[in-house]
Length: 323
Ligand SMILES: Nc1nc2c(ncn2[C@@H]2O[C@H](COP(=O)(O)OP(=O)(O)OP(=O)(O)O)[C@@H](O)[C@H]2O)c(=O)[nH]1
Image (cartoon, rainbow, N blue to C red; front, side, top):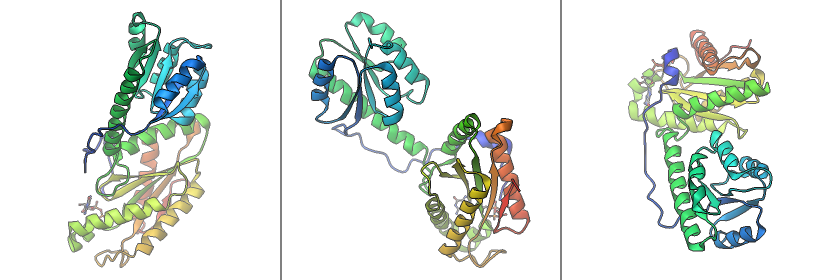
């Protein structure tokens, strides 16, 4: 096992694109949020778009922001004038957060409002009175681009050998999870998981068999996670990293034990191992000390120290930094 240097932690791995989706001639259906207090207009737009897309309606700006968080629309059609706030500030708020790339099409009274729409971060605009054909094509074109961007991002975050998330995605997630755990005072645990004597495995059985066993291990580890917020990535060659939001160290240790049992149940022969006649794991566990403003790098370092101890103490074991 190679202990990662601190500087490694932000190094993104190369993209390994396995396949590439062909552009769809017909855009697939999307979820469109209509934000307008004019019920006649929303009825008309629902008739135009509702045959292909799921249409949700908000009549106020605050309601639209809430619905975005709750329903995660693929596209917004946003009126400039709303009863509680203007559409421009709804757009700016969405752009500042996790909806930075969601297409937002403004509905304007005239083209003189165009500049304000672009400056607020709008993707496009349509003027009243609305031409149904123009609107439908604009919406479909923006959705097609959005879905292509989504698939590319999905590929960029995926480890092609194992099919689970890659290091790039892990680094983004750990930053975000550490931030929200510190803010909310919630526990967050990290497991660093490393296959034992894997160099000997490759040397003895060959690299192709090594790849195959890595992929089986990744699937088995992934299957040990029970909560939707739990998440595992391939962190490096034969090393995995697992984040368990809302989970204190004692519960995280149960997950680590489950992982060891799952690998043991796979019973992958390893006659070259100095530890056991089959493939085994060493796991380092650390919990975020959010109250002290600990960073993701420090959490990674402590989990890595724990993993190092697990290896030094004989491998095939869990070392808990919190004990
Ligand atoms: N087959 C295969 N092997 C890999 C891959 N990535 C890393 N490895 C191998 O994993 C091995 C890791 O070796 P070491 O870092 O010495 O660790 P180890 O032999 O598992 O020893 P300990 O961790 O101390 O138990 C090396 O032989 C790498 O070539 C991969 O994608 N496929």
